[in-house]
Image (cartoon, rainbow, N blue to C red; front, side):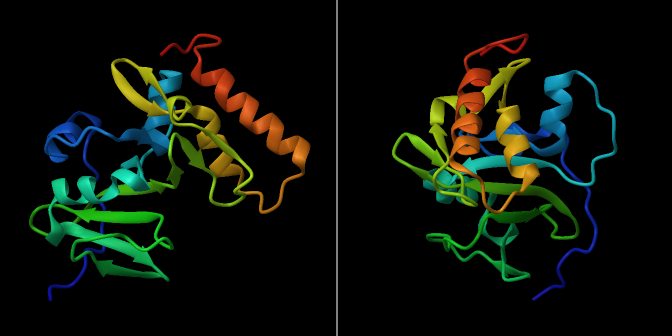
Length: 180
């Protein structure tokens, strides 16, 4: 086996759709999503992130091509050989076609039916329809979901759980300047 890449050369936002070979059940996530929402790209980006529901994950990875997909599992990059992805995997790194550089990170969002489940506190969930907003013709991760993951608080009080769920739904329904 060839050595794994040690360097990132992330895809551009414009290149994502072509790279995903017709798979369209993804949302722009990470720093590029924040830049798209705010209209300001205020920092360098070391990677490119998209979000995919676990229920759509196999189709996404198949579209990318098996030899380029590496599951982030227990601190290691494990080649995906097809089939279901272990529940412990929440990040997947993708190489360029030559296998020399990392170009994309797929962030996995656990889902059950029409709900998305926050893996760090399963009491928090939101409707799939509230998971993304549309900005400039592209589906972008709801900014409150971004904040939720970035805050990374291990244990929340019930009142905080309620507030977070309400904010996610509020933002996704086009309140303020962001519309669907």
